[in-house]
Length: 141
Length: 337
Image (cartoon, rainbow over all chains, first blue to last red):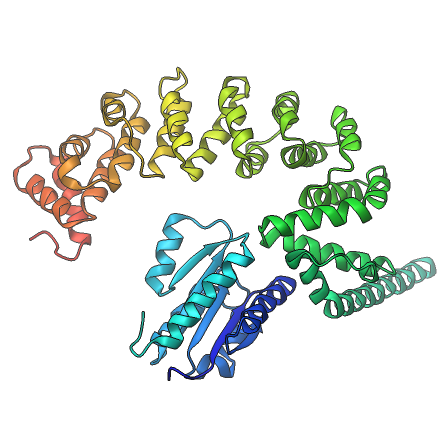
């Protein structure tokens, strides 16, 4: 599983920002990381996609406040998957309370970042996550 | 009847025209963004010099550029992105926005003020200062203050004091949410000059921020003669984890105001039970249900606290304390036993 391509799924309902995040993904590719990138504008589109059901290792970067299916519900469904331990979930949020963040971790996110984001820091952080996912023999979560 | 029919037909034609116009505008905007987003990303993030071919050819393309910049200014905080947005807006949008600020339509002026604030434009400071002398509506005054916050921070507090009686608590909070350290220090120093609504809003926002600076400023407010200020300061502290002067907080256990006693129960909630057992044993006997209930709730959150609740249930002669202990133990996994 270690040499497989890692998938980056971006779930963000602001189409312009989703595209900006995809370009951050492309910068990660340009730094030598062999990844595939997909963007989704709502939670429902993601859970109905092939990517959601694939057994590929994945980094999921998602907004907490999505239309149709919010980020919390998407995370809950991801964690019900049998190969969920190979999925690293990063939730982005604008103005969330301590209780909501705790709730998000309990549901199964792996990291939480507050918007507005620093894209340079996000890129470096995701590169580290991808390295760890690629290097793992055992689940890292 | 005929006039009515003609009226309906004309309205229909007009709305159809509007719908068509909007659809066309959206298509042009989407096409512009699709074609040029990558170049904008390069300009905003990688400091690639601005290519004038990216400038708009029509109003729809200008709206597309504004939508792009608004999305980045809302979602991205890289300093370089902020600088590049301001640089572009100052260079290419100043003339249009200067005209829009004089527009008779309220919505045009407000939208323009929003953009000036979001893009942190500095080229229109003169216009902003002159508008602040006589805002035409509360919303306009509020938006002008937001611009002061970002691009004229040294003048913000004076303008806020001048205009504060027009602002709602919500508007105060919106302004205080995004203040720099420098502006925050000015507000802390001049706190007593704010009206009550502003003071309450500032305390609530300090509760959300929870820096040491906020904490010590809140501690100082505990000496206020205004009980609402004291309660809000205690409540703000309860949202964080810093307790710098335990004895000062504990002194509120004997307060005549039950909300202050309730806040003591909330503030110590994140401390281990062995440090706070005496506090909660006292609070669970409080004459007010809210205080007793909060004390029992906090104790029920961990094993040692639940042991205290069981002890109170078995040995206390206070009927209300026994009842509330039982109620919370019943809700927990181990139950009463």
